[in-house]
Image (cartoon, rainbow, N blue to C red; front, side):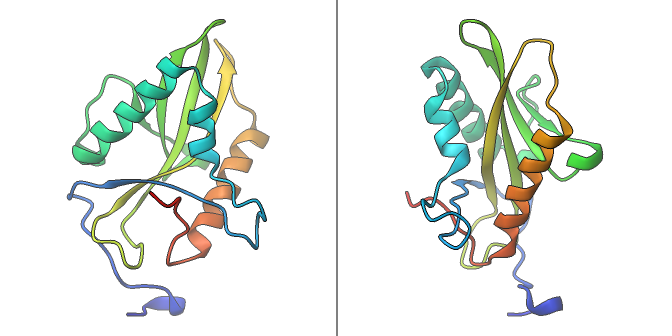
Length: 155
């Protein structure tokens, strides 16, 4: 079905449990077809990556808007409104690890809404990401939303 601007009017309930999906870049945007969020988790210390995957699973099943998880899952604000982040600290030396996620109820062909892991970043304790860092995250989100059916990493 098509809706405004030729887009999909297919919309799933945000009240339903979500599937966890990893954004995979389209060949036209990245010939290597990287999956930034998945690759970030793989590069994290094992304990941090395991915690992130556990948080993603718990949030998706809750579903996301009902999840109460002690600071591990947070809605973002200002220029990052519409984004959510998974927050885990760890490693040696200790760092802040963040996954940047979107909630997608409009993915064509999906039978459940998706919690989409777009990318991740880490930073030293008590530091902040720059506007340039956040701009890079938003650009990947725009790239993700440009295509429907969505580009997800195959299971």
